[in-house]
Amino acid sequence: MIPLIVCGASGRMGRMLIQAVTETPGVRLVAAIERPGTPELGRDAGALVGLPALDVALSDDLGAALQRAAGGCIIDFTAPAATEAAAALCARAGVGMVVGTTGLGDSAKAALQRAAEAVPVLVAANFSLGVNVLLGLAEQAARLLEGFDMEVVEIHHGKKRDAPSGTALRLAEALADGRGQKLSEAAVYARQGDVGPRTPGEIGVMALRGGDVVGEHTAFLFGPGERVELTHRATSRTTFAHGAVRAGRWLAGKPAGRYDMRDVLGLAGDAGRLAGPAR
Ligand code: NAD
Image (tube, protein in one colour):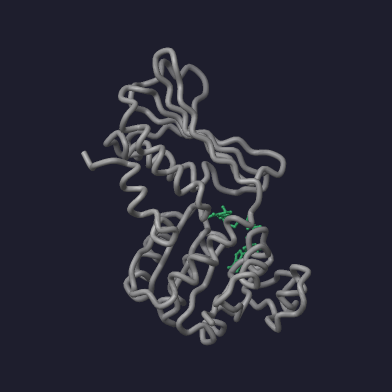
């Protein structure tokens, strides 16, 4: 049984992850981590999600928990500062990392890159099969629809902290890749006031927030007299949780390095084919 640790255990995703671990063959929950001061510390992880006791009490000591996870992984859905701290601990303990936390800054990204020299690290802005297929389709559409204006719109629940979502950024990157552009040079994240006409080649990435929307992403490709919209709608977080646990089971025992969700889903070849030959 592959040992897994859920970090951010009492969060929206953390609770789904605890349940997903119990529903996935071949893995077992060895620790559930929360930040110091969280009221749920000490509570059994099973009881937290309405399941029978799992004999895993919520703890704020990731360092100690990692001693029980040799050969396994942490599954981190927390916040960028927590992910950064976990990267150093995992590298030292030799435990792999599946990271779903979004909004990572340069310093957290650098910490994950350093960790990947010692342990396997998989970072994904989205763990669903549908979104990973969408990325390949968007890249192909951008490649084929020459001269079309491209924009990305995402919608999430009102409690989401980062904007635009990590998935929206990946989607915009897929569009930019398809057209041979760099997203950093093409992206426009806000329009207000007298912004003037749209620049050819720019890629707008806009975020809407409200209600309990789990996550919706659309890539728009506007041409003369027509437009294409590629949309993914997540209706339940369980799809992300099961994808992340599946990623943890897949990643355990892999050599140190960076991995992608498309490797786990067996889409690496398909995505390449969808995206067509490199230009
Ligand atoms: P949330 O706020 O409900 O949960 C985050 C949890 O992390 C909280 O319980 C918080 O107390 C905990 N936390 C914060 N600092 C911590 C620390 N130092 N140690 C341990 N726990 C700590 O948020 P959420 O909706 O569950 O999302 C969490 C993250 O996952 C966000 O960045 C979100 O964007 C991302 N997310 C990614 C995907 C994906 O498929 N990649 C899907 C959904 C959410």
